[in-house]
Amino acid sequence: MWAIIKKEFRTYFLSPIGYVFIGSFLLMSSFFFYLEVYLSGSLEYSYLFYYTTELLTFTIAILTMGMFAGERKNGTETLLLTSSRSITSIVLGKFLAAVAVIIITEIFSLIYYAILCFFAGGIVNLPETIATLIGFLLVTMSYISFGMFISSLTENQIIAGIATIVLLLVSWFIPDLSSSLEILSPIIEFQKFPGGLIPIKETITLLSQSAMYILFTIIVMQRRKNLK
View 1: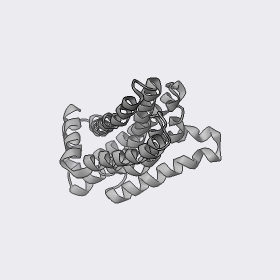
View 2 (view 1 turned 90 degrees about the horizontal axis):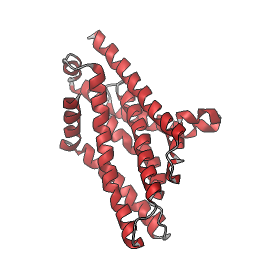
View 3 (view 1 turned 180 degrees about the horizontal axis):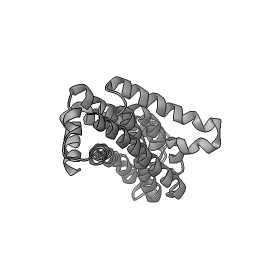
View 4 (view 1 turned 90 degrees about the vertical axis):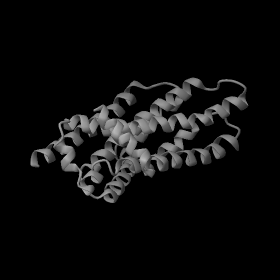
């Protein structure tokens, strides 16, 4: 699996994908940092993630749309499926490589927290910051696993990207139908993290969403392998 992680991680940065994702995230963060923190005089670093998490719905497809659809389009899927590596290790390797890009993105985003601490003259809102970063990572893992699952269903990267965006947008409004459906909306589950605590229920829900879509992807790819 480690070989898959390294291969996929290199792919993100040997192509524009990784740079575009990180750059677009930092650009959005800079915009909201200026509006919500600088102009308002706030010291709440977590404010950045209220908005960037919503916009992540549109940018996560950059990382996920080519995970399997790209392999299929380029004709490398057969080579991948007939290799000695298990389907589980392939899927997890691709997933963890994308998560590594998110972790790098979060590390870069700490520059805004450093700016806040500099002007505040000390560490500010550390518990809220840690909880927000953990919550952001968890919701992004859910998004990545979902986008990866969609990518496993088609050979067209554009279709995979659009379907990921549209269905993640739909998940915003699912709780409006019934409060019991909040479990299907990652962005709703994230909203308690910026309060400074790491809620157990929401953490389990987000991890369960990731595990569920990873399992779905493994099932899809295993069926494709059996048909080869």
